[in-house]
Length: 100
Image (cartoon, rainbow, N blue to C red; front, side, top):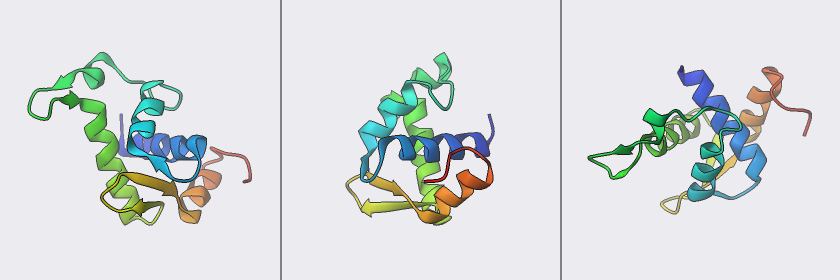
């Protein structure tokens, strides 16, 4: 599974949820497997962090997407995110969403 796959899955999840997506809602939607498959390994608990591995992936890719200006961290420190116009543009370029 490559970085692009995860980034696109996170972006599409933010589109699904809409503005002001809370981190827990992002985890829940990702877990459903609509845009990315959560393998048993990804669903397994990380011993050090006591949370599923995919939670760590989601936070990592949200951070990367914020740095690329494709996601906005709406309320810093509170885990609330929204897709930016750049993120929507990326999905449109990839033909991953209809015009919004």
